[in-house]
Every structure is written in C-alpha cells, then in structure tokens.
Length: 482
Image: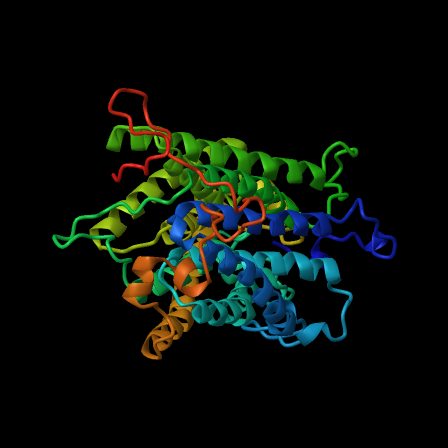
C-alpha cells in the first residue's frame, strides 16, 4: 500500500474528484469484512459460545476505532518522523494535511481492526472478555501501527516508497496490501495467545489424539467466507487509492485503472485455485469433501496473494494459490502434532499463508509492474524467478523476520501477563457450560419462549394424543406416565 501522495498527480491535487479516489469506497468494503469475520467466527465455534465471539468482533471494531484514532494512525503515518515510528496526528490533530485526509484514516482503521479480528479467532471459546478489550486496543493502537509504519509509510525504514530513496537492498519490502502487515501480525499475535492459553477442554484426549470440536453452522462459515471475498476487492485493488493515472505513453487505454483491474483478477485467481486445491487435497487425505476446509483454503489463497497482487501476472497468482493451499494443510498437520488449538485455523491461515505470500512476491514480481506501481527509481529489483536477482527476496525475508520478532516481543509478554493476573482464560466450569450462558446472560439462539406468555391463553392446555385401541384410556383419564 502506498501513501496518498504517491498516487496523486500534482496537476490534479487541487481538483480531486470522487472518481479519482478509491479510498472512501474501499474503506467501506474493507469494513464489510468485519461482518464476514463475525459470521465466519460464529459458524466455526460451538453454539454455546456464539454470542461471545460475535461480541468480541464488535468490540474489535469499536475499541480499535478509538485506539487507532488516539494513537494508531499517528504511529503509522505521522509524518515527518523517523524510520521506526510516526509521531504526528495524535487524535487527528492538524488533520487533514497535504499527505492525507479523513478517508485515508478511515481506510487504514479498517485494516487495523482486520488484524485484531484475526487474533480473536485463535483464542476463541476460552478467553475472558476483559482480555479481548486489552489485547485489541494494544494491537490496533501500537503493535500493528508500528509494523504498518515500517512498510507502508513514506518514512518507514523498509518501505518501498521511502522518501529519501535509501531503500532496503535498493528495493524495500513489497507488501502491497498486507500479507505481512495485516495477516502475519494478526496470525502471530493469535499464535501466542493460543499457546499461552492452551487448548480447549476436550480438544485432545488423554492419549493425546486430536478430537474435532466442530463449529455449529457451516452455513455461517460459507456466508462469512463470501463476505470476506467481497471485501477483499477493497483490501487489494482498493490499496491503489487513486485510479485516474496514466502509465507512460499508452494513449489513454492503459493506466492505473488497468493495474486495479489486474489486481482484482490476481486476487480472484489465487483464491479460486487455493479453494479447488484444498477441495481435492483434503479429499485425498481424509476421503470426503468438506466445505469448511474449502472455505479456509479460499481465504488462505487470498491472504497469500495480498502482498504481491499488484505486481504479479495472473498466471503467477495460480501458483500462489496452489502453494498456499498446501501451506495451510501442512500447517494444520503440524499444529495437530504439536497439540496447538486454534478454532479458526487463524494462525495457520493468516500467519502461514501470509508468510508464503511475502516469499512469493520476492520470487514472481514482474519488472514492468513493479516499476509502474513503485515508480521514480530506475533499476529497482524484482522477482528472482523473473530475472530480477535476489535483492527483493532478501527484503521479503527481512520483513518476515522482523514482523515475527516484533509481534512476539510485544504480544507474547502481554498474553503472559494477562495469564499471570488471571485475566486471560475462563474457568473450566464456565468453559464447559459455554461462555454465552456464564458470561453473557444467555444463549445466542432462543430455542424456547417459555417466558413469553403473550400468546398463551391460560385456559388452553396441551394434552397428549393417544392412539386409539381397546387399551386406550378414557379421554378424561390422566395421561399415562412415560
């Protein structure tokens, strides 16, 4: 993702129309992904924890909104600043500016809360409510913003659009829409939360064998997956921020609008390929067709292509999705061996496939596309397999290492401290009964309306209908006890 000023044409800066800017509409699309996360999470947990997980998704957005407004945006894009962290625009003071306006803030907030939503899936069904509030505010207000500053801000030390043109390995790390910045951050944070909490009761039996704790609604999982697919078109193509910009001497038929369309195509192809690969791969491994696995494979393909969606060819996106599917399957097998419990496979999906997406970009980024999306620097490195050498791949590996280290250093101690303060995990009794009943006043689904007497006349009494026959008691006789 590039800052606004990298996309605006100087001659048009004083006459910007809504048709040029993608960020407001894209922000709405990315925010719609919160509904997708909520439905995916709700369907993936047991019915007794539905209200809890949906409430946490609401609060990821609400708590994240305030923390990102107060601190997060400033740490991310508060120019002028150093390479590590931003230091302007706290509480949106002195805003808007020549660098950005309110629509850009809204777009970045939608990304920040997406990272928090990923983490909530990893620690579902066993986490105290107060822990969600603490980690969500900390993640969106500090941990995620620092990472986004490194790779997306014009001042970030590893950004491909660094203002002084002193780029990491002459390239900077290319993470166009956030395979690392969003998906790895959320996935690794969830990894530490789930590891420190431990698995859910009953997830592994006494002999250590895996026991599947199935979610209660495949329909909600599919609905959530399609909503996330829809929102991803704001996530990836929307990261261009502007659309009316020509490339070279194309005569007007080729420009940034073409790159926006290409990005939508690569996103689509990677997700579709990953879904089909997972379908047939799991069929070979377990012997049946599973829609839940296919949905996770689909999302894994999207998470992987997110880094390089704007700089690779559509055929390369197919490779990305194919490998992402096997990365997800392999990570799930490893998690099972290590007795790691993640109800939504969030770390495996977002962390594992996000990591592959960064490596994929270092291998398959095309020279022409890299120079179009990241202009004004001759000889910029591109994908290793495309003849561009290993500098871009090296920058991508650096990104993987520093994100893993930063999130581990910040979120690991946070979750450990919450555990020591007895603020992280609920009691075993509450977990067995379900968090909806013990922590939220009742179940998400109303199976009975026993408390509602409005439609029940007091004189009307339901009686059992008995079969006719010689042994049938008289109609006025009391019913036979079962």
